[in-house]
Length: 228
Image (cartoon, rainbow, N blue to C red; front, side, top):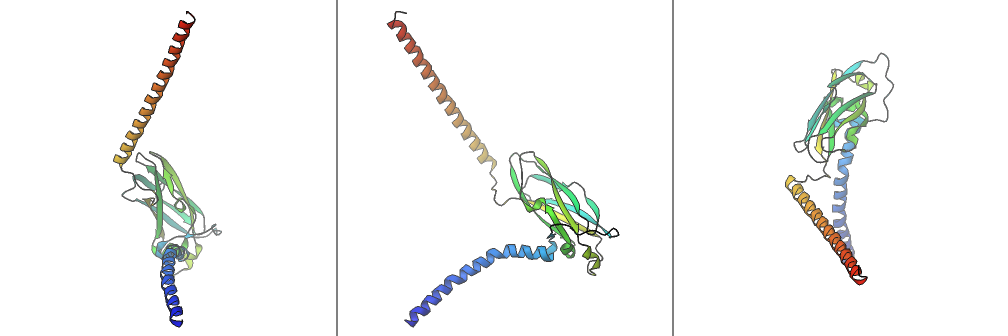
């Protein structure tokens, strides 16, 4: 009996360990992202509900904007303005512009960071197009806003007092949830759809002709019956 209980405990442990490891692996990505946003680790900007009140005599800092595109995303993407100068603690609004150069709708997702990396903890976003995926139709373009501020505490940190410029960078990727359809498959499907539409049209015309023929035959029979 004791051996049976021990075997059950061992079996339960063997099941529980892989499940716990899988849950930990699943949770590690969002936990790591949260850690980066809180600490600014790896140049990851934080997220804030609103900007602190900027002092009238607060020093200013230059914010530069950079943009990149993944090779498999047929978009043009870049900042509307290359740089802005803002006071510490002052909310600022900037725009990036994206255009779909392809002939099909595409959904993109943007990742971001700031450099120098040590300034990441002091750069916070209030709202950003990067918080959600962006979908553009063929030839469609859109201006995408980002609202941000630089924490005044950056001026009190001796490790970043040499930072006079912060660069905010975005890279757009094709959404992982969207599989790219090869052009050959798209053309084949279009041909199949056209063929099916043609068959439906032909069937409708045949049905109409059959109906008209039946009406004409019925009229002829009536004429013969009534001597018309």
